[in-house]
Length: 291
Image (tube, rainbow, N blue to C red; front, top):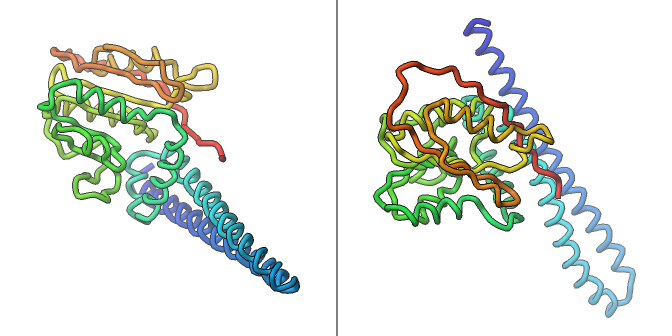
């Protein structure tokens, strides 16, 4: 396929994504309006009751109406989040960047849904990584790949370069994570906290390898189901071997948490002059269930 055909294919995909988003937004508006109409009808019916009964009933209805609309909006917002989430897991980082640049509001929708999902987790991996950094020297320079709301940078004394597809904060650098603006061998720690999302995730890890100093740390936190080989996930040993073949040494793995796995690697002091072909396992998408 030549460049012209590839460009046409990407444009068609973006038009299809925009059409999907518009359809979902229209559906959200229609369902919310329909819900409001049903509530109005209920309130109109209540006028047939006595004055005192009406007062009591209307107070309860106002409360029920607000609750019903809030639940409806949350449900529709959750559906939009799941659609965006599936898109991010099944496209490349470059395509995701174009997707959000076409409609930056989708980034806010995604992160609102993401925060809602995280609120149900008993423990968050970013907090464990924050503690790990606090237990090490504050002089370590950190690169946070897929930083989201930059919580890591806001909770440690270290110099942190925060990267994500869209920047909603002056401290966040907007970029494709396979091509950051940092120089080679310039950071001490690279972090991927639930952010190995694109189909080209190996290119993110190659970029982390490039910017890390020799003996620099690579910390990866990922959803546990992505590494459950009994349900179609990758074998953690196969993933670890692939990262090591890239030029790292495995230091430790933490499987103790119910929701996620933590991997700790260090970049090798001496890199082989022969570039080894790395066989990467496929990481299945993390598709959140309806709540």
